[in-house]
Image 1 (cartoon, rainbow, N blue to C red):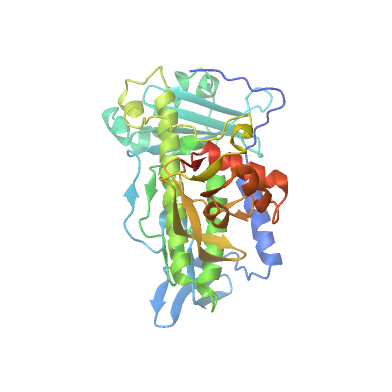
Image 2 (cartoon, rainbow, N blue to C red; image 1 turned 120 degrees about the vertical axis):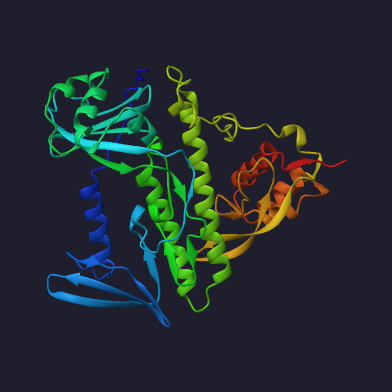
Length: 388
């Protein structure tokens, strides 16, 4: 275990999901969304002209009809379909403890030989604790439903950060849920879309589930809007959402695997070894700006590895295809930089003009500082080079 002390200026934030979700729901209502609450939606049915969703409310049964259906049911995935697991099987044991907030640290993470613990103080004053492990470990340990609490207590007893809780009584029953990462290979169609954990689930070690869900929601919103618009490019919208969800899922797999790979005390144990991956190489630009003075009077062109490819992009409130720069140094094709389209700028790098001439030409449509920033970015990513 390693204690990490953050600078005084650094802050952490644990989101109260109940309050946060209520704020989102209120925002939806204010935007004109009809909210049925409380209500229970049953499995939707696809009809010739859309979807029907049977709903049970306190006032009785209703049937909702819709042109488009968004599956936001998380791991329940009301639209069904097979998913691809992107991590070894992982389960989470979880419960709350009654704790003194003055004696219990706000948020803690601790590695164990066969898993890891996470705990945080809830607004109610209770302390939520989760233990992540391999289901095979529970089977080998002979843990049954009736012995979950005693097993959980034994995990805490061997913990440096949570040991005190082992002597307390849990406030709730110890429960088990699936925490395995997965990805749905086809998260969108012309009349439906899977969002959040209905599309893919990330390893809890990343601790970025809320952020990922919000990103998924924003991508989903512009995708649905494009699909339902009369002038929308359906092909672009479908390609955009599939690509964005796939890329995000793959990125989280690499990040989580890198975090597991950084662990040292138990790195030889099966739990940690099976999840470890090399940490992705950093792709950020150098901290100090690149000096391009030596290139001002040199003619420049695109490097041979650079290509312009058609890529689905968000343009305004819809998705459409736009030319984008593709290069081995880029994780994905890039169509815009600082809100400016890169394709026409890149096409001007034909080897016929010096960098000084190119910057003057670019500065007719943007601020000189923006032109220089784009030139630096192209040079740092090996997209721009000196013409022979």
